[in-house]
Image (tube, rainbow, N blue to C red; front, side, top):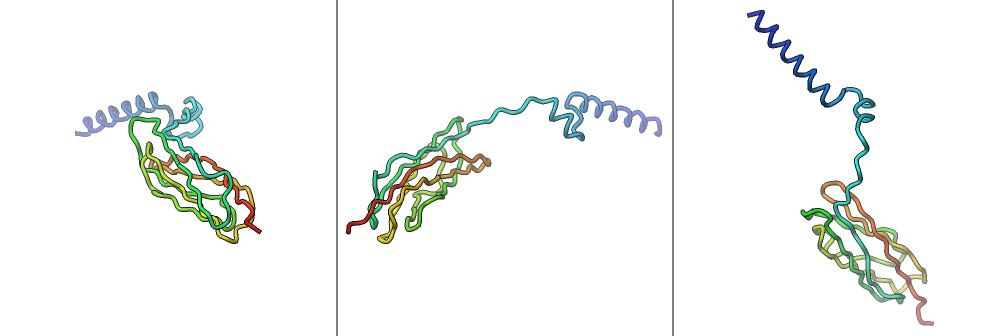
Amino acid sequence: MVGRFHAARRTLLVSLGAVVAACGDLDSTGDAVAARAPAAARRDFSISVAGGSDALPPGASTTFTIATETAEKDSQPLTLSVTGLPAGVTAVLAPSTLNSGETALLELSAATTAAPVAATFTVTAVAYKGSTRKATGQVVIAAGAP
């Protein structure tokens, strides 16, 4: 019985040794990482912003198209958000959650009190898989009528 135990233990140790030799020393972060080439960045989807008016008067709205493209065969769920809007400008994304390969509309509305300004805003898409892509757009708030 003891002999079989030692033989099984020796077989297990030899098998583990073969796995470590094939995969590298996984306990040492430096050895395994240094032995592998860096992974290429994968572009699983892209995002773009288009449209909108040249100048948005206070109290008016304009619509941008947010297009997403799938670089892989399978689409994936994305969550959209907007940042960088100037004071007095609000955004409505419809829909704010979509699948890559689909399109959303971004409506920007300027309050009647919005000051004249040119601003760059950012639309961020975060995938369920963890990838993040960003695209920028430009909004110009025109001077109101005197």
